[in-house]
Amino acid sequence: MNAIDFAKAGLNGVPAAQPINHLSLYRLPWNYADNGISWLEPTTKCNLRCEGCYRDLEHPVHKSLDEVRVELELFKRLRTSDCISIAGGDPLVYPEILPLVTMIKEMGWKPIVNTNGVALTPELLRDLKKAGVYGFTFHIDTSQNRPHAKGWSETQLNAVRLQFAEMLAEVGGLSCSFNATVSETSLPELPNLVEWAREHADIVQVMVFIMFRSPSLSGAPDLRVSGRNTALDDIYKESEWGGTKAVFAKDAVAYIRSADPAYAPSAYLNGTASPDSIKWLLANRVVLNGEVMGYTSPRFMELIQTFTHLLTGAYPAYADQRSTSFGKLAAFAGSLVDKKMRGIAGKILASMARNPANIFRAAHMQSIMVIQPINVESDGTADMCDSCPDMTVHEGKLVWSCRTEELKQCGAFLTASTVVRSSLAQE
Ligand code: SF4
Image (cartoon, rainbow, N blue to C red; front, top):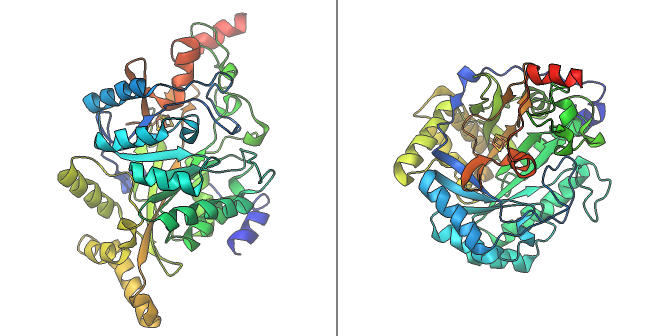
């Protein structure tokens, strides 16, 4: 069954969730003070309305460049990171995006623009490149109702993804990633995205699948308030698109594997509730001429993270088109590390023997990432990403970017507890 057939049959033949043994993987060394990524939100304004977006889009605010500089200085003081993800809102509607990108570059980070892409034109892209942008993460999925793509399926949206990937490839030297929020309703199409990414491994460096969360799918639907009795769904909106069942990293793994049976993650970040709750799950594959040569090993990932940190002082999070095109070198050098990497090198040699044109083709490394944001355990514990890479600044403090709306609207993080549940029952 190919990926498209699978997606059609997906709702009937749901693949079984796949257990993930975290101890067989490399725990990314990222931590609170020294991380691959930090997260900046210069604006809350956006030109789309994604289902389940938790930002207050009714009252959009642009921060001034001076305010943003203060936040960047706080990052500098408190946290090492490889890149700054410029998010929002949508950063491309931020009027000072060009000087902001330059400022981030001059302060020593790789600026990554996290955008829906709607406002990106070839001219703006060239200006951003001149300003020093390192890469883009395009958020594209069926939750968005994008202009010119209303009602499109995830599979149809691959045409939109390709448009952006080609746009970046034409300018050259940039990192190209795609995010898709995935819910119960869109999960069956995930194999088609994995297959699409494989076909375009020369111009797509990263595919990220973010599991959708909604208040009713939190696992503790009656635990909705803090001491202030604030309704959780005032902040986190319900969505039909989200379906009726929560989806987890292990569900995504099952669907990814149905498109690519060789899929094998190498690294992870655990949750704060338990060492074996997977929050970030990272896999890297080597693709030559459209064929997957294999997935890099946990030890190889350890080598890359450690070696880069020794060299640059930061753990790497993003790589550009040029660096990811050294898949052959990575496989052959990785052969010194372990059997798994020798397997990839062997497959590359066999493929070159079968098709000598492959001798001259680059093998591309491509990452597939699964992110499972906060979920609430039945005892009310919020399971967050341990060593959260997406920490942002709110009122002079580092906070989880996925929960700043709680601070903005309630002045404190919401908490859930069985005590609160019983007090609710009495109301
Ligand atoms: S804790 Fe929240 S902000 Fe941090 S990485 Fe996880 S989902 Fe993102």
